[in-house]
Length: 147
Image (cartoon, rainbow, N blue to C red; front, top):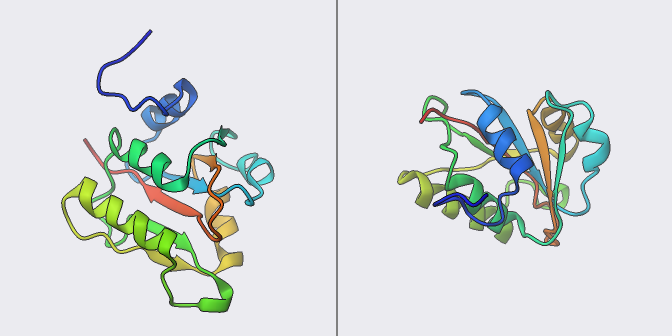
């Protein structure tokens, strides 16, 4: 069955996850090199959604079309930082910041997370969405807001 105004790349399993998440729940959007299978087993839902044909930016743009980011926290967006360039936003990070700011119609700054500190945060998420993103460190956490 087709639905109106739902981006076509959002599969039924991902729509279920986004709907089942509550305010303040987080979802990990990870690149193709991330250990998604292992990490997803420890998440709240235990689910890994595979979106191999989509980039991180396409995936996040589609998610933001149906899911608001949390207004009650300073940074509802996090990213895994490059350990060789700590404190530097990579182009993939800047692209996602811009998508989030545009979708939310407010300035969104991504909180950098050290590489090894990112894994336990991802494990505590509701689910993991593995994209086909090939740019290094294209790993993000989104915190769901209220509609």
